[in-house]
Length: 539
Image 1 (cartoon, rainbow, N blue to C red):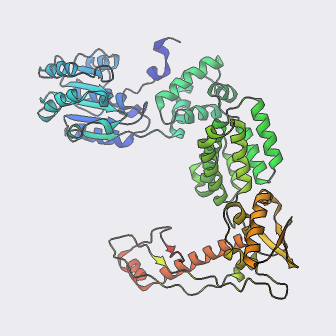
Image 2: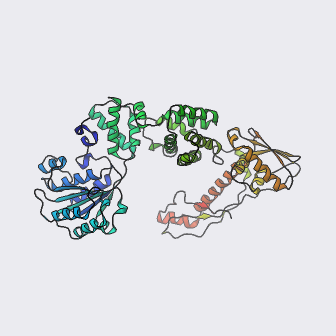
Image 3: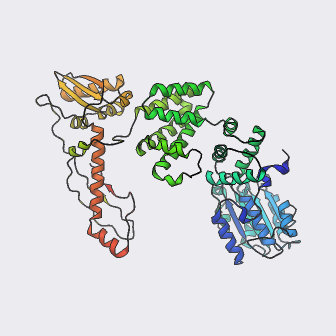
């Protein structure tokens, strides 16, 4: 592929109207041009490939177009065409990464003293300006303090933190954002439509995500995909090119996870290993998939109608509670970060899957109807009113869950109250919280654990729970844990979750009925900050 046909060059925007994204920067620059309120120095910051240099060149055309200073340069006059081709004598571009010394800067600044040769302004574009030496910055500073009227400086950098404050304070700064994958996808579809190249939407979305917010990287990857595929850009080809994980594996893993099928998950991991799939990448893409599932659950409109995986995402969103998705996302992130510490990648990946099987948010999913009856709630007290200048955020005194005695009486034992008294940590606590009491007789405590929580019932967890029970009762206690539904009894985890929910509901109801809050709403049209009401933590 010749340099002239490289997509990133061929489809480089030549006007503000052709730019994809960065509307906040375009709007500010357009207003300045139309109102002739021009500054002498501009600083564009942002990651690679988001349009810093492209916007700088369009701005240079706007300043020097023969039709006058305008936000819509004609694109056909000699100034516009020469800037587009890189031959405009009054547009000087400097790569600071390779011209860091003070002598280079002094030479450039000396030329700034002379009037433009053919244009209206001399425009200096200095890319990666943070690479300049301290002495070069000092030399530039003098010109920035007293710039000639015919000179405009446009500085660009990926690391503004390294630019001296004295230089920053003399520039108008614009931060260019990373482009969202959906915007990149739309632009890629437009480009390939114009180029007449067949493609699959799923393949373009893979490239859009791999570009990580950079349009230039997206177009470069598209060039690579076109060459790799020898024509049509298909999903399978792009996955192979990028080393991306087949989403089918991730979908099947989540299906097995929802079913509590540990054996099925390990079989899928073995299949992924046989295909030499990088497990670190797999965890990264699983976290990305969980993020999109969370979006589908809470903000469905964030998943575009033309999203290739929309139907599958909505199906997966029905399998898990929002709390569970958040937990699995954290586990996937930590698993990816820790995979280098694992004995090998396979062990790190499968251990992450087993961790997902072992843990579940307390009370996730539907709660038994009678759970609410087990939680007596006292009337909360309202904290003193806050001034109207701040958001209305209140702390509410919590109600207390007053449990009956945990000691056995007539063969009965209050398991919920007992667990709260035991000195347990980590897995032993999780095991105790997710069990219900079957029986207590002759020094033997028999518990039931839901089958989907069976990984909590490790030998170490059982031994530690048994030791804690023996310490509590002051005599030897034997523990027996059976897998089963446990009838209609409520686990301590469910009660704990119900207590939290009840406290939150009481807090919100108390705030809603507070005279101060009601008056603020009626007279000042005040609104409560969503999720700002929190119960006071019990001491």
